[in-house]
Length: 115
Image (cartoon, rainbow, N blue to C red):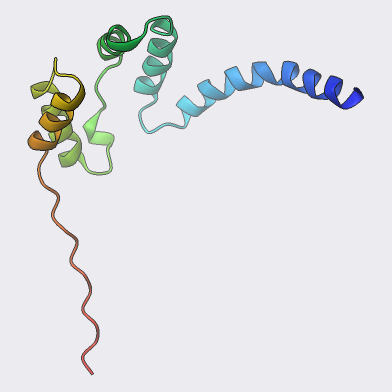
């Protein structure tokens, strides 16, 4: 019983820390402005479900800043594909995104030393 009480108290006192950690995570994110916009959009759209929620999130979250991406060309290609495929859902969306994104080149395998 005492353990349960201690566990419950720990959870209750830990809740403000969890809320603060989301803001701290955005401060450390690659694109803090987009991270904060995403957190706000998730809160705003939390009561919606399905297609309505997806539309709410798409309208509320700004596109990523491709200049901060690890590979800006891939990021820009993904954004173009997303724009082209806008309005499609389910299998049609997956097929469209797969067709619109450039094919990735396979990495060259290192050759074993001649010997």
